[in-house]
Amino acid sequence: MKKQNLTWLEIDSKAFSQNIKTIRKLAGKRLIAVAVKANGYGHGLQEIITLLKKERIEYIAVHSLEEATRARQLGWGNSILVVGYIQLCDLEQVFRLNLDLTIYNSETVGSLGKLSDKLGRMVNIHLKIETGTNRQGVEAGKLKKIVSLIKKYRDLHLKGVSTHFANIEDTTDHSYANYQLGEFNRLAGQIEKLGLKPELRHTASSAALLLFEDTKFDLVRPGIAVYGLWPSKETYLSYRLAGGSNGILKPVLAWKTRVIQVKDVPADAFIGYGCTYRTSAKTKLAILPVGYSDGYDRSLSNLAHVLIKGKRAPIRGRICMNLMMADITDIPGVKLEDEVTLLGKDGKENLTADQMAAWAQTVNYEIISRISDLIPRRIV
Ligand SMILES: *Cc1c(COP(=O)(O)O)cnc(C)c1O
Image 1 (cartoon, rainbow, N blue to C red):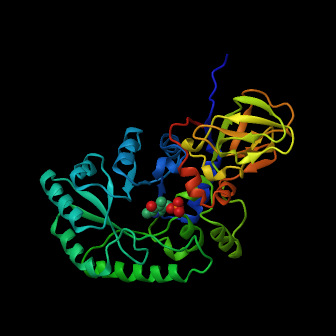
Image 2 (cartoon, helix red, strand yellow; image 1 turned 120 degrees about the horizontal axis):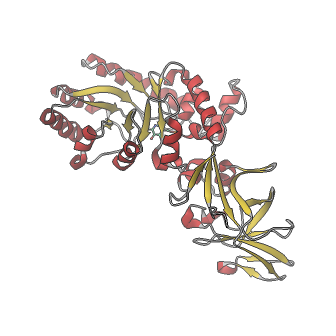
Image 3 (tube, helix red, strand yellow; image 1 turned 30 degrees about the horizontal axis):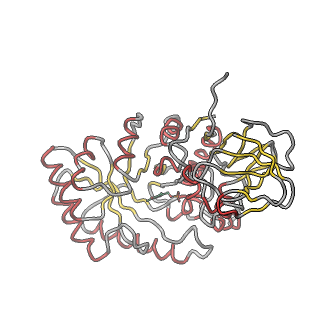
């Protein structure tokens, strides 16, 4: 018998390259750093790097040293911007892997500076400044001190200065983003007055890239848009109200599995743990081998649908660790090992990450990034 996957993800290479084209248009002449953290937003770091190698992309942005290491092992030869934190004891790896490091602590500057002296190697750093998100970033009051520390080390090259917006995707009111942009310009100006001239200013993730010309500067850092999803409904609405056209982003990911049992259940029977669902009539179920440990959120219990033969089959009962049950009473002819779509298109039907996020009361980012990295990915 032909070997086939039981559960798998399909990564649509055509949709991906269309999104890259869209992003390139939005970015104009600026450099692009594609965010591939969290296993390429759940799409698979290996698959996304394979696709990115075919594009003219200067940078990938990763969170951790582990991701950077893996990206190099996978043959990513262009630049890597680490946006997370690397422990002081691991900083030598920054040289070995030739990474651009986001910095916001004087301890990191000191350790990295001493290492660069010792190794006689130059290193690119990007100073992240606090503009009001109050996440990573050097506070305005500490800017002068960290800049003079950077200047002490000949081989610390301040290549970039960056910040991250708190409130573009969550609202159609962009006054806070404008305030942060003002702070960024003011503080970046201070850095120049102190004698450093970073060539790459960068602030824009997908929402800013889609909505604000003034945030694009020299490099943009899109993530979610590369994978064909809008950062939020508000971002989509703002983009459309500004005259932007529909359908510029194409979802890249589909999540599929197969029926592992077809079962007849009588009326008044309970389904699953906790007896949270009771049939009102004779019911046919398809048992599916995916559960919350695979990243299919338990809050989708008795709520979500899956697609079988192009039709919606509602989830009955609680999502289990590795299993779930779907109602196929009105879908005739379902057989063992038939294909099931958990996320994506089947015929005219489409289950989007946005729809799943609405059901689970979260954001599309969480739906896709939590899909287990144990599930095989397949580029189609
Ligand atoms: C994840 C991330 C991005 C990308 O954000 P999207 O909203 O997915 O476009 C950009 N910059 C930083 C610092 C990030 O951590």
